[in-house]
Length: 282
Image 1: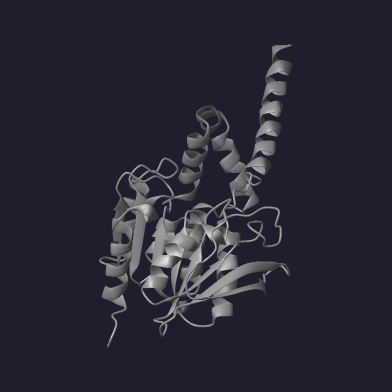
Image 2 (image 1 turned 180 degrees about the horizontal axis):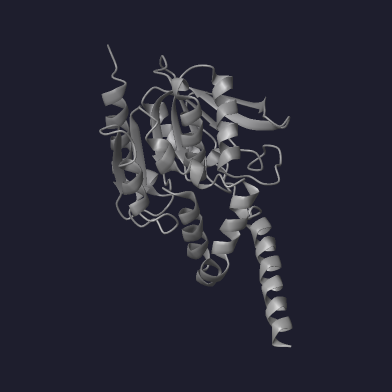
């Protein structure tokens, strides 16, 4: 009798965990509304890799452009989430491009989004821009950005990663635990295992720390001091994984996962990094 109870409990746990694996891909979207208020704004749609479409903003500065910055948002957000960050680059004289990944904002639906899909959408916009860019990603957008940069190094002048994790499986467990400690302890390890099966055991293969060593470009890592989703040690590990001297770290003091860009030091750090690697000439 106890054996039947045990088998029933195990089967129930597995089925429930499979349901949770599906559910974490359907975390409610939290789009924001923030329309660019500088330069000349082009609002368009471009064809995505699966035949759907992505909504895209391209904002041209009032002065001759210093180049293009492509900004990729994180999980559950949309292109509007990157407007505050893009404004900083616009003030520095850059053309800024922001898109909503599939299944986000008003881009077309997609059942199972992940870092691979975020990377595909970033690559789609890179093709549309058709010139080397400064690539900026936040959170899941940062994970997608480093995959895209690794596959298209000739298209990336500078790489900026905000709120990025170091190792995928470890980060997912940390993220789910930050949402709910009970879920993180009892279900997250198996959910991550099923996700690894779903993605053909490639989760760790595309961990940012594994891809970093192959990127010989200047990198700025931005991380919130109080980030509970991906704690600060992720940023230190990621910085040290790039070739020596290629990556630097800006820590938003008192900031959480998404608020480093609101600190007074943020625009100063961005300007310093960009001007050192892409100096202006009068």
